[in-house]
Length: 185
Image 1: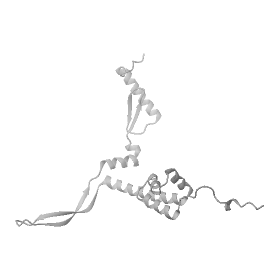
Image 2 (image 1 turned 135 degrees about the horizontal axis):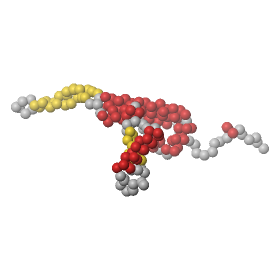
Image 3 (image 1 turned 180 degrees about the vertical axis):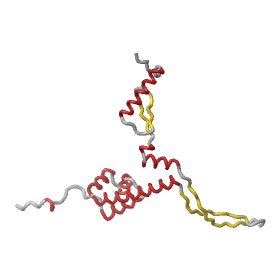
Image 4 (image 1 turned 90 degrees about the horizontal axis):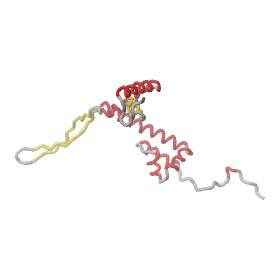
């Protein structure tokens, strides 16, 4: 009887992986660099998203390439958002057609000019809400049982919220009943 082969020499069972490092890593790098999502990259490879996620775990070089290039795409987007928030200028060209007088002819020429994009308030708000949420967050605390809002311009602790709610409850009791509810007796 022949001796049993060591485990590392045995033929692996199942279908061979379609992953080819020299091909898939480079494509994933480029796609991630230009902002592609995992779903889009998996679709480009012709595999299911679940399989792509398994590849990310099984092949650390793929995971590293994706992280690095997605970070580069995110940084580019942050710079663009920032520029849009503060406004910017850029050089542009346009074609100007000028009449040559009474003979009916015209001449076209290219003119360079500076185009200015004004600051965008939406970009400013988005940036500030994410960079300084303690000062710029819109907070609405809703008490569905009483049907009223507790609105705050800063994050509230549980104690602060309870205090505000108690004040609101007293106001409702003083004014009368809330629509659809009877006054407490």
